[in-house]
Image 1 (cartoon, rainbow, N blue to C red):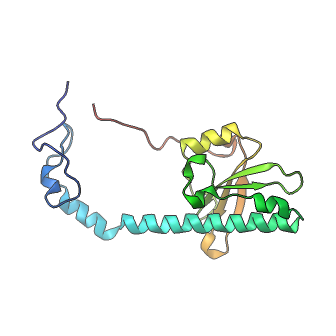
Image 2: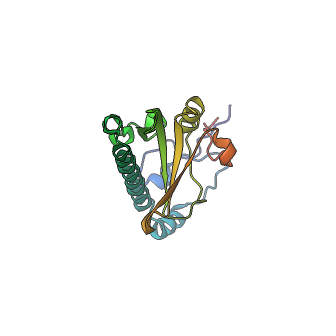
Image 3: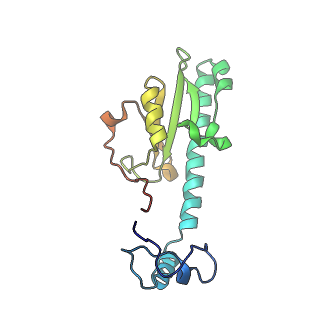
Length: 179
């Protein structure tokens, strides 16, 4: 068995002195990374970026929910509009979609995963494994609704499963556990 813990014994969290006591793995650089990290955080605030992304995501979802509600009401399907659901607004992100709506002509369920950006239509998006599997199990109902150019009026389009026909997917994250 390889001993992956270097000089310091335990990871003690983001408290004073963390950098001098955190775990070092055999292939990690033993020099103190604190100055480089402080420079990076000074230029780029990850907490601010995350907050911006959360508010953009929520604004996109809210726009789609209102759009779908109005679309159903204008089609004379207020009954379906009242059945719409926004589980992501309640923190239920485990469902693999953000909004449940319906087709106005036949009442078929639509499951929308909303992807919002202020950039152009071809800006990359991230899909979770759960989202991809939900799309595969519900091909008639599932849609990735892409909202782009959000801050300049917003445009949108839908991507229907099979997602690999319209999207070029590349694995971006892996689950990794130290040996």
